[in-house]
Length: 107
Image (cartoon, rainbow, N blue to C red; front, side, top):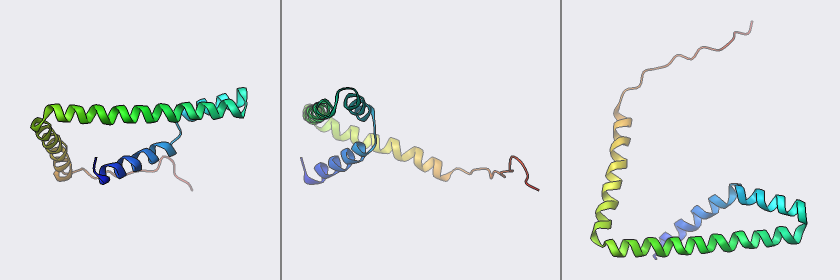
C-alpha cells in the first residue's frame, strides 16, 4: 500500500474518531455503571475490534481488486465519470432566485 493511501486512511480514521458515536456512549455507560477499569477494558475491546475490522477490510478489498484485474480500473474510471457528470449538470443548470421574507416583522 502506498504511503499516500496510508496517510489518507489515517486522516479519515482520525476524523471518524473525533466524532462521538455508539462506542463513546458504550464506554461512558460502562464506566458510570461499573467503574474506571471496566470502562478501560471496553475502550481496549473497541480499539482492538476497530483494528481487526480495518485489517480485514483492507485485505479483502485488495484481494478483490487483484482478482478483478484490469476490470477494477474500468470500474474506478466509470465511477469517477458517473460522479463528475451529475456535478457538471448541477453546476450548469440555472437556479431560480428565491426571495426570502421574514416570518414576522419587528416594528
